Image (cartoon, rainbow, N blue to C red):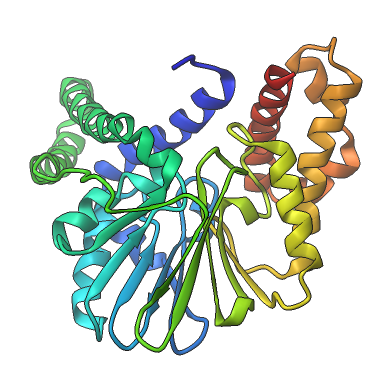
Length: 340
């Protein structure tokens, strides 16, 4: 696979988060906010400081079965969630849905599959066709954890004895986690979606839809007669466009904006949205494609500097938004430029 700017940004943001989470206690899990959407849907919102780096999850439960959408990139948090579900689920966890192939949505499914071996993994047909790559990515992630631990041990000699004792304790915990995770496997999907499929969880139906938008293999879910959309990263207020299929993505967002029946939108990152709020990511994606079309002779650096300020203004009001949007803009401009 060719390493371009967008791929490097996507990989590095996850790797930095993952390596840091490996070396600390999983207290960050406690900051995940459980939001009750209705009697059948729980929205597990990632804490705000991690909203652009790690994913939300959605738990849907009918009278006979439960379904989980996405798995965090923090394996310790996924383990905690897996244990908590055993206390709270009223029905078997029958399905695991990966909304797309990005690490912070898919790789943690290996943890869920370990705890819930009977749960069927559901993916887009494109994700299934490349699944060997993602299985390798899971193993590569564990290799990166091991190297991070080794490097941290090497650096112990350069710090005080008090700090050494503190870090040795953290590193021993990290080693125990790594040994445990090395027993896990990302098992192949059992249900493949190429267009759409409706699942009856027992008195509550969920429809899965296949798209090419945020990536070439996205799944969304609609429930409650189309009033609730679980849209993954397609509907993020600040979208990551580095692997995007811009034309179909923009068309899909317009469709959601015009759907008067659609009342509530759950994104892959960030808080709950309404239809009107999707105008911002649509404007961002549209501006990227138009800017590249009008200034195709400019470099990525020049395109960033000349990008319309009014489009970026909503993303600059908070420091984390500004930092992430700048990286996402670069990746989107590179994607649009390479696609021409």
